[in-house]
Image (cartoon, rainbow, N blue to C red; front, side, top):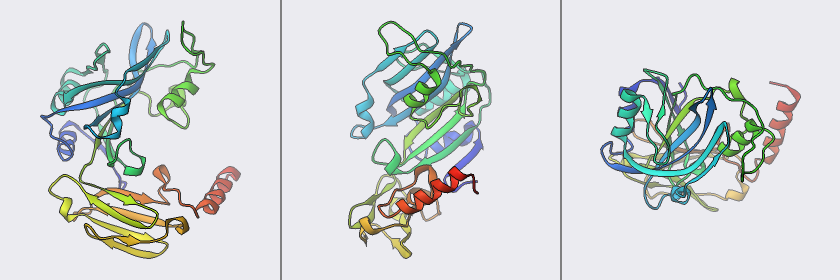
Length: 289
């Protein structure tokens, strides 16, 4: 199991994990971004994300609804609403549907779905805090065709797959062979704390939660060890740093946030890391391992 990921757990564990980051019975705002596809007259979720936020988070700027309706695809961004996480999970597990304001209820084919939890660090999240992302394939029989996108009053696209990737911020979308097809992701900010880097210092900010006072920032910058408690700072010259490994952990060793020049998915780009990146790209391009 990855340090930053918990895989293959069911509904009960999902509720337990979500309760660590939010009040399950409080009404919380969310925005939805996703793509629906139609096959044989039935609309299904091709891929979508519900992002929960509070006032002051960066997600508020996406709250304006925006949709594009093509004959066999619907591209949706910024549909917003409020719901309790308890109601959301009940609709997913018991009714196998999700109700999003502005859309008809989406029904899911799968029962007893399993979930994966992953961590998006604060420098790569949509708000100021790191995010916990809970993902499951809720639609197993989604079909999509790489057709041209043609509709009255909408931009023309030569490839639906290319536009889906662009719209969802994916490097590539592989169509019917894409392993993410049919997935719903639920993003919840982890407000217990986050790392802050400036040009001259590294530190972290405590957030909400009982464990905030027990957080510690550990790691190393260019081989120099870092171990910081709340309100302590590590001084360094960021424009000269090439190897950054900073991990915000609880006293039970749970990772809350990180900055890493070696974690590829959310790699922290450093000013002096360009040579290493160029070497890595050269190795990948030449097919070496």
